[in-house]
Image 1 (tube, rainbow, N blue to C red):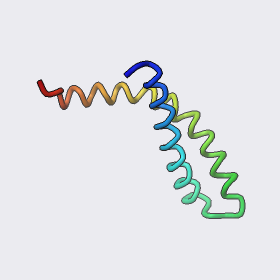
Image 2 (image 1 turned 180 degrees about the vertical axis):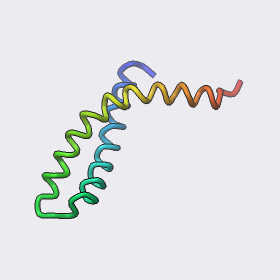
Image 3 (image 1 turned 120 degrees about the vertical axis):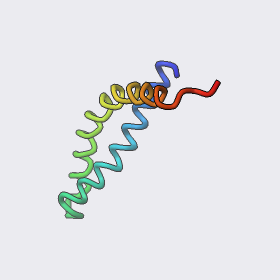
Image 4 (image 1 turned 90 degrees about the vertical axis):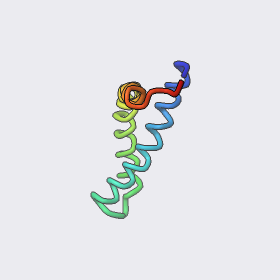
Length: 74
């Protein structure tokens, strides 16, 4: 993967995961109250700011572990 591909992968993965997780966690924590959309979007924003750097750190480590456990076929 090129550097640009890794960055785009991290952004897309972070957006997708944060979108789903922030929705579920907001729904569980406050329920579908009147201002749910605002609460959810706030959680999404904060979550994305955490998820992007975390993805950029964890993805290469995960790839390394997978390659060590399941080596490429010859």
